[in-house]
Amino acid sequence: MTEGTPLFGFYLDGRVLAFPLAVVIRAIFSVEVTPLPTSPDIVIGVISYHGTIVPVVDLRVRFGVPPKEILPSDRFILIRTQRLLLAVVASKVSGVLKPLYAVTPVKDILPGARYISGMLPNEEQLILIHDPDMFLSLEEEITLGKALAGTGEVQ
Image (cartoon, rainbow, N blue to C red; front, side, top):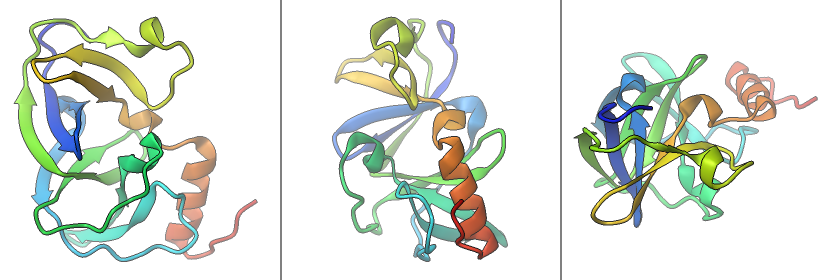
């Protein structure tokens, strides 16, 4: 990402996170999440968004923190990956960010790091930039696909 590439910022507990703005569809108020048996740990269930079943992802799992109960004050950020529409849990949304600096690729800082594509300094702390196409491993995507299909079978 280059200097000025717009991002969509949000908070998850005390962490400042962001997505490339291009993958964000919208932020919505949280709604009741229906559990999805046999889904990967990062998927806490599904919601219906205009009749479309959307998996809900809690990034706390990626930070080694157990998911929390969804609060009425929480938000869901709807994003589109190359293969899926996902809702990501956020404690609060800060909105569109126009960085003054280029995002530092995570491979330059932490070679081998997964799920995060870059970092960006701001006044509060480092903003962790998430690459939605790296959210789920291939195994997690297969497991999720089977859970959504209702088979629950894991190979």
